[in-house]
Length: 271
Length: 363
Image (cartoon, rainbow over the protein chains, first blue to last red):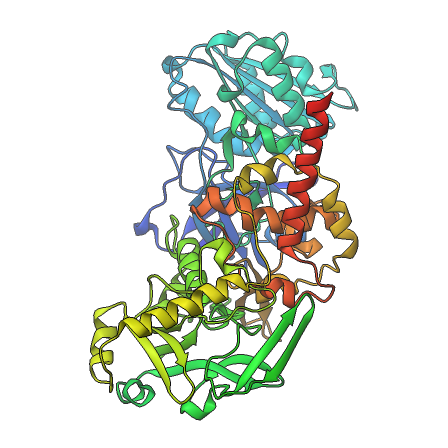
């Protein structure tokens, strides 16, 4: 329950309400390793602790990178941190994206809004080990063009010939000339073999629900569609009881699940 | 026995009358026990009564369980300085505590909390520290209360294991004795130091009759057969809405429950902000805040919160930890201000599911 002290190395805004923190440990000799999809409990001194997914590269875990949105007291306190400030870190916790079992398969990554942050480590992994995978597709949807995360990297990924990037927005603003509509509309034309695909999905629950429906419509089995869930967490280690979702604790049995495990619970209200 | 324990450095915690209820508190001598007391319990009802004889353990459970000691209601889990973050709080073990006079259901509840708080991928260091250095003298139940149903959950009226010593109080017309059984080496040693005679057939017959009487007079029953599957299939049963209309959402049931383990964390800072602490306290899945994520709470309705609590206790717990999360102590029924009865709710859901099945079968 004791956080490790880290110091803010760099902090910058991604969009109006999202930001990225780069953290260096006070005791670098202890190292830090994580798997794509895992999260940390970040402690803002005197304010509180929240679960935030890691958005950096698992093969280059330091500086530790988190991208999140300011939505409450703690995340707002995190947003206000300055270079050199201390922050507490516990983790990494939880399950990870199936980047190893997905070897030999096509990989489809579907992200909605801030949901791209926990998926970026998986993308780094598959791109770094490009020859291990078949087709790679990234489908990304946000509310407006200005809500898009990691825009520079998105440009780089779009420029690659060995992956397919589809981007869409709910509402076009300014000079947007791309797709308009929900991200699920990109699924039908994305290049992947549904019978040999692993899909990784993160975004609002409603977006994930329709994404899974579209993917299964194309023939991807639910057991090969992975989603990342979110619930209230106080401890991150299966002791506080807050993150229960049916029989599972999202902090230790999740956050990443094969979708078929969740199906009986996702169709219920207020689980 | 108490003197022998005290002599060996054990602090004794056991039942004691305080403010009209039986609580767990430090025991100095036998006179501290609720001698000659009994209790009457029913939904939303608890009354201490006097009994005709001088039985030491002639009552059932009060509102507190050993959870209050082992999984403290409030505990500072971190304390540090702004420019340091190094915790000045460590998991201190408690003094050696002997629980004397806890019930089989309470012992079972401790073993269940052990599964939750010690056996996961990460243990709870604070609970682990408090869990060390304990001595259990459990007193089997010769009578059942109005809200008891431990016979249904297989956690009483007689303890099978997990104790150092177990005792059964036997009262004849002019004799008053305890049938003792050792459950550990330490228990054997303590037993050897006490004035005792070997157990006779008569003693066993007498205690056996008491247990049978307790099982027969148990105020409640819970049909656990296929309960998990039943509740998982009945998440949309209208009964949840009916019980939610009575439920005040006060969380009494979760505080008195000996297995409920949920907690939250509160952050405090000194006025100048130079020091801060994080305090863990019991939480209840009946609060709206419990399931809050940005944008709102997941469980907005009382119906979903009651359903979460009961399906966790009786169904999900089995998937999570391999046992029921209920030991049949009946506290949630007794201390519910409106007398909601978990056994009645489970039975109602079962019978409405069966009725529906019968109707569908007729179509």
